[in-house]
Amino acid sequence: MTRNYLFSRVSIFDVIENQKSAAKKAVQELEPNYLLNASEHDLVSSLVAQFQLDVPVIKDNEIHVADFLETDVDVSGDPIRFITDRSRPFYIKGNKTIIAVPFNGDANFLAVQPQTYTLNPPMGDIVGDELHLTYVRTDQNAEAIKTEYIQAVAQIKTHLESLRTSARSFNEQLESLVRQLVSERKQKLLAHAGVVAALGLPVKKRQGMATTYAVPVQRRKPRIERPHVAVSQFKPEPTLAQEEYDEILRIMKNMVRVMEQSPRAFEKMGEEDLRTHFLVQLNAQYERQATGETFNFQGKTDIMVRVEGRNVFIAECKFWKGERELQNTIDQLLSYLSWRDTKTAILIFNRNANFTEVLAKIGDAAPSHACFKRDLGKSDESIFRYVFHQPADTNRELLLTVMAFDVPRPKGPSGESE
Figure: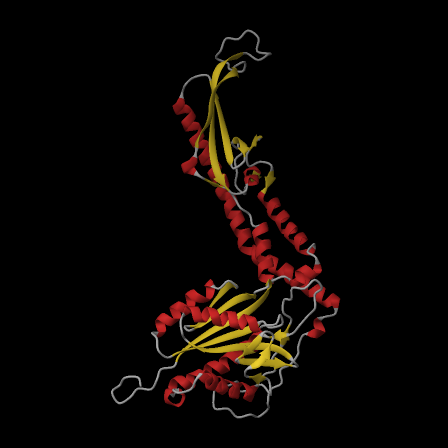
């Protein structure tokens, strides 16, 4: 139990500066291989949680009397009492009332001086997650005690609210600060290890290849970036750059638009035939890179793009058959992946169900998978983006895009789908 004047030991400005220094020190002290192999998102999140400022919040509904007992009261300083020798204590019987004020948050903030404060701060005893306010009287005036503790609690709340304003501003900037610290140290470690040269592996595209579908005016060479790899000794491996991943998905999306606009041409095609059309378009853009039913790790996948023997993109094509089938497809996709694979996609074709309901079911089913980590939101009404982890290692993250398309059957003379 610590008895002290509240809100008077250290300034909130000093606390914030110390917290920034502590966060920087924590990043600098991370073991290099751990820093390079860990999921950056998870690492940043854990550091933010560690260094966030958590100003207490008073739990008004739980304020209660913690103790009420008889005690000896020294009244030698009371000028209205007749005492012959005031040089020593003069005790009479009185009452001690202890009001417990529970709170949630970091108790250390009860000692921090806010930007605005009073020169006569309240006193209290910090006991675990309670603040004890003690009142000693020689009379039985409960109303006087009630008035005092209500005023004290109000004063405490005012100080806490001022601290909370400062803490909120710091917390809002903390993620950006930590991410910058982590990024800067990673870049220094990579440069020191001489692995920056491992970046920039090109995907070679055909030159002058005509196309029926929407493609970039100028074909780009994708940049290969380093993935996060959870091994004891960090070893850089290539992965497809985000912008090139988006380009591959765009090519596939445009192919589906053709199917939607000309359903009769595709009405009798199965998954394998549809997949072949995607491969034609991908191979038109990526020279000899896109393959179908190519063995990869534990199984065979529908569509795969390889760069110099490395898998950089993997996708599955499926007709919609319900949430359970989507879960199975995710399992299937994960089973195909080696640890180098970080960019994936599932293309879902809907022919026999209400498309709005299908989209809702995808939004529920995918995040319920055991390897789901976080939702990156929709890039389109029917395109979902998620981060998953590989089954054996939560640090080995992969980007999964689920693209759903409604490919209706052509209408017959009666106006009904054939």
